[in-house]
Image (cartoon, rainbow, N blue to C red; front, side):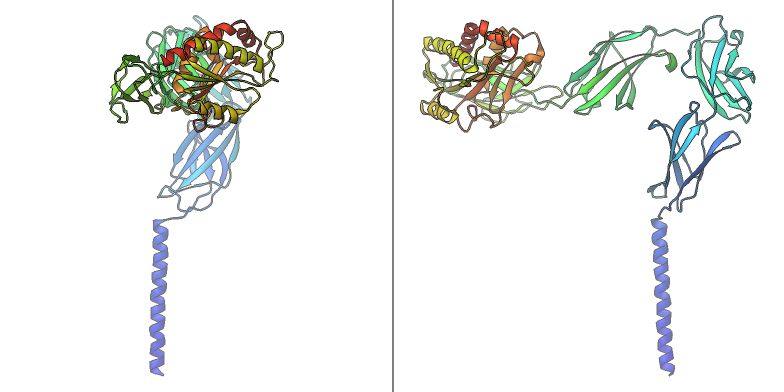
Amino acid sequence: MKKYFKNKMVIFVLFLIVLNITFFVIGYVNYLYPKLGNFTIENVVETEKFLTLNVTPSNNATKYEVLIKKNNKVIYEKVEDTNQIVLDNLEADHNDELEIKVVAFNKNNEEKESNNSYNYVYDDPSFEKGQSHLVTNNSDLILKINGYNANEVYKVKIYYEKKLLYETNEVNNEVVVPYDKIKDYSGCLKAILYNANDRKLSTFNFYLNTPIVGKIKIISPPETFNTRWNDVTVNYEGGTNANHFYLNLYKDDELLSREEVFPVDNKFTIQANKFMENTNYKVILEAVYEDYIEIAEQASFNLNVSKKETTKPVYVSHNPTFIKANTPIELATLTEDATIYYTTDGTIPTINSNVYSEPIIINNNTLIKTFAVSNNRFDSAINTYDFQIMDKTPVIYLSPSNQYDNYGAKDSGYTTEKQMMNRLADVIEVKLKEAGFIVYRNNPAGDINAWNSFSNSVRADFHFAIHSNGSASHSARGIEIHVDDETSPSLSIATNIYNNLWQIYDGNTNPLYNRQIKYARGSLGEVNDNYVNNGALIEVAFHDNYDDAVWIVQNLEEIGQNIASSIISYYN
């Protein structure tokens, strides 16, 4: 019996030990990782000289952060280590509807938001913010007040820096400050409205005897500016007497950044790294004397930033598959101000490779690898051109459109795409044959598969599809040439054709019509690198646009001669 009792005592003691260890572990874990309790915002009350926000305590909270918003914008924030948060220096306009939120933090800086947000109407009076901040010489200062309550007592004090210049309790819908009380001061003066408990209700800055900043106007960019992801240069005029300029960048009416800029000759540049791709901004330029923001002048423009572009690939001036010895080869890219790098030893080019500056003379079989680099763009693709010294008669396959039901713009003289593009091909064919080229044409009754097959069977050096364009709106204009991708063998001849034809296009003064080289990426059978050798497709302007259609009709011979000359110079 004693042995049985002794065993039970041992078990009981062990149980107590385990229980204590468990409580200790739980307590220690709670100490290390204290869990925040739920809490609620209760009210806002006036205490002594301040407004105080009261919240129920949150278990294990070490501090509380209060955020006050007006129209979804934060106008006040403060952190306190107590659940009775003094809202000192909170100022708003009379009848402002404010939303108050509070977040509690524990010692590990974990956070928990209050169970509720609190809506508070600021019903104290305030200075009218729309009134002038400038004091006219010899004129008393009249300060208008919104929300004046005749049952309350208010007073207004005027300060210059920390010096009290004037005080009055004669306050109603407006307060008059005698000019002779402030006339000897210059710069920023401050009017402060207090209630009977000396709680600050509203502040209004005003200025006298100070330089006035002149009106400012942005000359460029235009009021709405569309650009790729890139630096943006701002030119302005005006802003006389300003000694500080601030750039304010807004997105969706939210201020993202405000920083001082230092213009030179009324010009400064916003760096591309300030922007996100595919984002719209509002840019505001402030011209300020000292820090007198209330009398600053502003000008703005809307900025639409698209994606970061890729530098256009490098193309060559002459055909690489067969070329005469001593031919000078030019490297170029459609991206302005790009730097071209290249190698001739078969290695992959880098920014440490040769910088292209003058034509490369081809005396022997030469492998050129090249790419281009430009600011705020991705580097171009690497293009390889294997130049082979040999004599060969170029073989050209012309494939004009067979689309008999695509009609031109009314009264332009353009009939159908089939008829007009075949007439254009006639001009090209004649000139190419005069230069000694071998030329084949497609059969309009056939299809792409038949055309590609015949082109390949005659070993065409260049397969050239000839079309005119159309758009849903009938308002689009411009020339464009399609190749398969950035490294297609047809890139160079297509770009040379485009550049030369663009010179005689009657819309070439409008950059919106400069459609350049397009990449089909497998979607066009006559340019697909897997189906045809060295294929390109030109869209010779838009036949459903009156101006473009008239240009084609009236310049058919010149257009054909221009295209043929580009092909001839590429192979000679």
